[in-house]
Length: 217
Ligand code: SF4
Ligand code: SF4
Ligand code: SF4
Image (cartoon, rainbow, N blue to C red; front, side, top):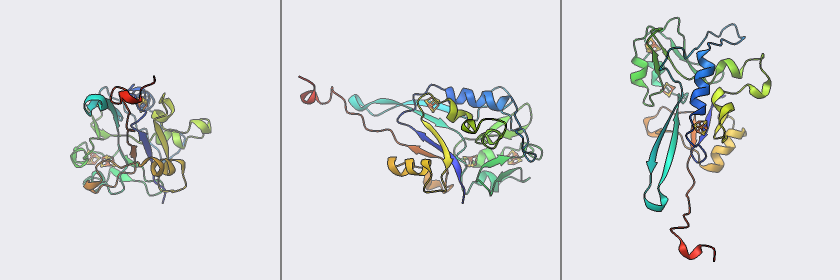
């Protein structure tokens, strides 16, 4: 079964925010793509960000470092954001696993935001509807743009190639192999939402200061 999602490398993310900005730039312009069943999923209003990057300090002493953590919808396999929605506006696509909101029938009640433990939902106060990452569905299937660019906007713009997009349901895909090689992990699996997106952990750093005997003569 196809499970489109992101693999985010916490080792190489430098917290530059380019992914967040490019996400907003693409989505705020309200592209609807060429597919007749697609509606605009615009990020629209100011303050609505589908992708946010948080930075914090981790570890102590020589092993201390700043960790950058990009956060967006994880396109969970069993998402309560969908089951709690009273109107059916929130749904998960069978064909590729992308979780979307139909803005025509969303009543802006906010239940889905309460049900999402990852804080991935964004209320558009101006439009009165809930919004979220769509994996740039209007890019990845868009035949009007070159094939190499049919990727989520955040993936295309990342200067360190910390973001990868693909089918995590296919064990032979590049993203699945990357997760297997690097020990990629879903976020808070104990909650049972089965996130499709995966995070690659930061590698251990060896500090010269911590090992003076190994320093160059
Ligand atoms: Fe739903 Fe949140 Fe999972 Fe996205 S991350 S599918 S909004 S529960
Ligand atoms: Fe459904 Fe919209 Fe309410 Fe979320 S805010 S639960 S998508 S009707
Ligand atoms: Fe991290 Fe890449 Fe986003 Fe910059 S663009 S914050 S490096 S994931």
